[in-house]
Length: 78
Image 1 (tube, one colour):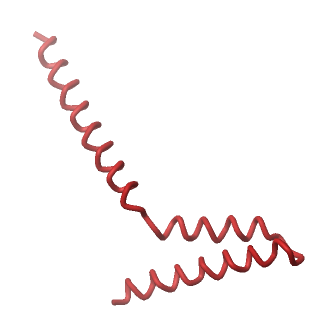
Image 2 (cartoon, rainbow, N blue to C red; image 1 turned 180 degrees about the vertical axis):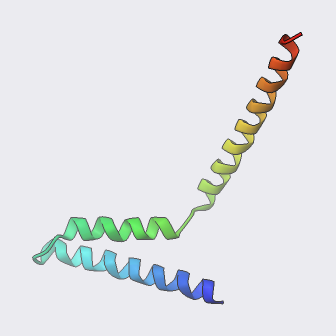
């Protein structure tokens, strides 16, 4: 429960930072910097499903490649 509350709080802060950055685009202040900060916070908190799938596939591919190269090394060491 506390974990979900932390995540919700971080998402709320990121959303407010993004809105503040958008407002600063027309008001005085570092709008682009604040917007980038808010998007960075949002991107750090949310991990999209396609990123997780790609990460899993890449890890599986790397493990299979490592296994194949280990087998080739053992085969040619005789």
